[in-house]
Image 1 (cartoon, rainbow, N blue to C red):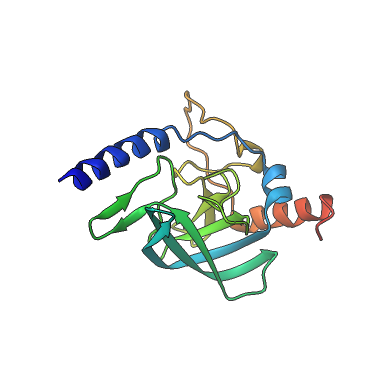
Image 2 (cartoon, rainbow, N blue to C red; image 1 turned 90 degrees about the horizontal axis):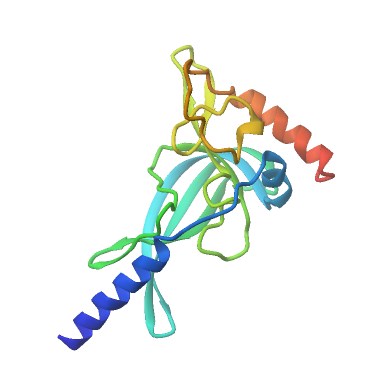
Length: 188
């Protein structure tokens, strides 16, 4: 009983600390400069697992991407990243604001290879959603499904008074901006 109560208290304390997840806004230029790898990829697997960290049990989630368009830092067909949090049986951990993934999702990914709680540059800002419009054109949205009209909007707060819904940027246009940004940053 004492172990169960200790586990619950530890979980509540950890949840309170993790719920305060904050991160500074990053610009498009920051994404391009800080990412070790940039690609367009489809989520092919989302697999939570348990890891021991000293005396503590930590839940992580491993996300596998099929690389559709390698833009920088990869020539691999598959990229795999680990994120803090997930659910394995009775063991679970949730990190406020941590990206959630589903098999079949397509994303533009700006990531770091160093071990961290979240490899995405800017926590969620370096993870853009790709959707196909009714005309068959791939479009880009932020992770919270706001249309990305231009790369200069990355890292900016959402506009409160939007009167006309703008069309999200075309994936092809974002790809061109990424390649230009890489050249300007001396990374190509």
